[in-house]
Image 1 (cartoon, helix red, strand yellow):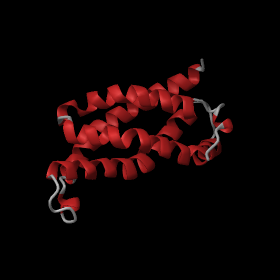
Image 2 (cartoon, rainbow, N blue to C red):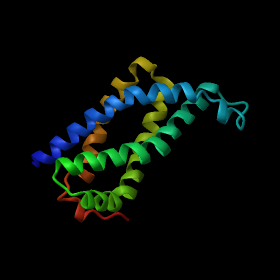
Image 3 (cartoon, rainbow, N blue to C red):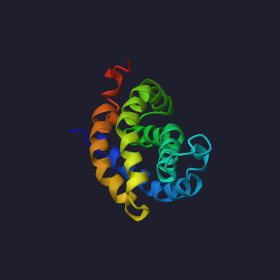
Image 4 (cartoon, one colour):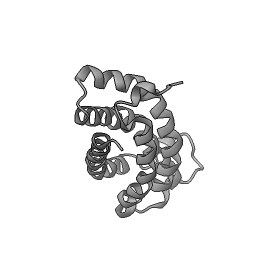
Amino acid sequence: YDEKSATSIVVFDVFYRGLQCFIFPIIVRLCQGQYFGRIFRNASINSLAAWEQTLVTQFIVIPFIYYPSFFLITGYLQNLSTKEVIERGSKMILLLLRRNWMFWIPAQFIQFRFIGEPYQIPFLCTVGLFWTFILSTSAGSSRSSQAVNVT
């Protein structure tokens, strides 16, 4: 058991869950199916909105907000230097993005398509428990990150 690793994961998770409460209503408001609706004219507007919201989250928020925050918070709480944080993130980002997309694209489509907005964060917290296990075993400890095979 690595106490610094566990603490850093918890601190990051609390930070990001709070950030989701702010970001998701904006994504929902901006992505109502109007973009994909121009291409897929006969598709359900609710499904198109869910796809737009999922893809914005997964291909903008995750690589540009979630993972930089993850590596900064967990790295600094595990006493890594800025250089070590950057090296750790650079080594692990591709592996983690692939795992993230395999897990979260289906989960977030379900969230945006079938879960009412007031219940989305509780849904994500529940599903996120499983993701936190995957993330902590993949990248939680700065000591184990050197042994991760990115291919």
